[in-house]
Image (cartoon, rainbow, N blue to C red; front, side, top):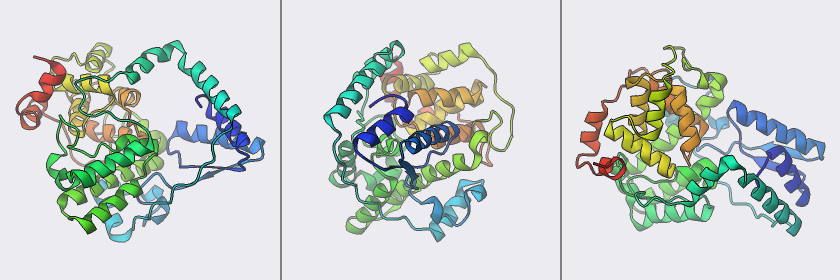
Length: 359
């Protein structure tokens, strides 16, 4: 069912005769406002909204400090969490009763009406298409996410090589590719952590298996980061007010969005993003650094563009990483990427640039 959550969720709850609706925490301003509207609408029908601390690998209640005391630097967070916290076992998947024929009909009608909106026509066409240059197609269903875990961990042992491959640009298996399912909540980070532990117990434990856990800790950190900083997570000067806002150069920004900057490594990344909604971590850092630090464009424009394009968009990691790269976030170092040097290091044979930016 598509539409206003404050209308759709109470309608679904009423059809299922549910007196409680369960959800995960919504960390940022817009999400909190939407959650509060749903809570009020449910209460008007005599139902309740219950919020569970289930979006992160480490539960907020298990942290050795309050959200307001979250360390400013990730390494300090990581050391304390690794020393003092445990990862809770994932909860079993609940049994879900199917919706009635009436609700299915209502959901179909609302979905059709929403998706018929003219401003979504281009997005629908893009979502239905698959670019032949893409190495990996992502589907949101939980079953697909579990199948990806089975293949990447157990069939191909890719997790045992992750630290060596994680900076890849072309191919399906240089990273886990689990972020779309994690961002949607169809696979839990605690499920992935449990799979890491099982793999380490049954196959091997090495730097690569740890590094996947390390990346999940980064994800946790930015989820807690946006809960700590709220509006300052979106402020031009960043959470610590370090530097002024970048220039509002609309032409340069449009060229970046279109992959038409003339810098082939940057253009390759931006064209892949626009065509597929996906982008490797290495490419994300380079295109973000070029926009914010080389072109000097307002980093918030880049963060908002990523938000509109990424199929694995997650509010804390997206905005936190943009502040990190732009030099206005929780990072003591001044990071400016030499994109040509990065291209020669990580795309030595030019395959990535050739695939997405042509000759």
